[in-house]
Length: 277
Image (cartoon, rainbow, N blue to C red; front, side, top):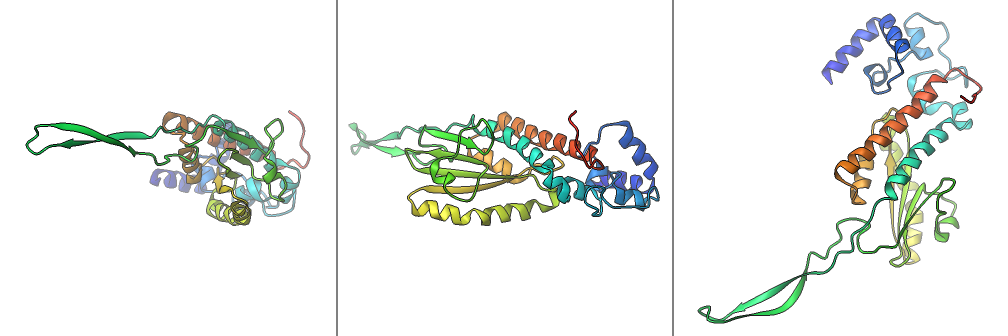
């Protein structure tokens, strides 16, 4: 981290080096020049004496890296951020659809009785052990994963009749359990804010479902716009019994999808109209 800070300081003092490096290679949003807001946004170009106007050509706001990747109203209205969100959602839904709970048999242990002196022994009745659920999906095998995306299973009626649209719903009809996943791809500095907002937004729906006899759980998940994965994503996969190398691979895929999508958005930051390419 200290090394990155030194690199960032050097780049800030020598913007011509930064510009040449960015032009010579694809924009890597995890490099120091992104982390320390040293990409050639119009605001930085003005600061470096390379330009006179710091505004965003799309919305006339001040064009910073954060503005381009998450705050431009025109980019939002054109669906650029929704496109990125849905790309990450597609990967997350695909990963979750492979998760399976375990139907734990009631492990038993026999009680052994021994007479005084150990002359005779016999087994008593069996008692159940280790019957607690380890993962959210444990205990039944009829889980259905639906996503708010074309060509995916539709959400169950109990969700569709509400005004809210969770990104992913994991539903068990036999046990009346519902897990609602809400994905956000925010700028990294707003991850905690996004998590709290989504949690509060879906609290009422969760409570209504519980009144109707469902066991409902809301799980907000954040994948940063620059490809940094929030701890919520790790926690979600772990609770769905997706662990080890599979979890590592999934988190890497989610991060790369967000970063690559943001790179596409960044490269078109000065284009008012989008063209197919």
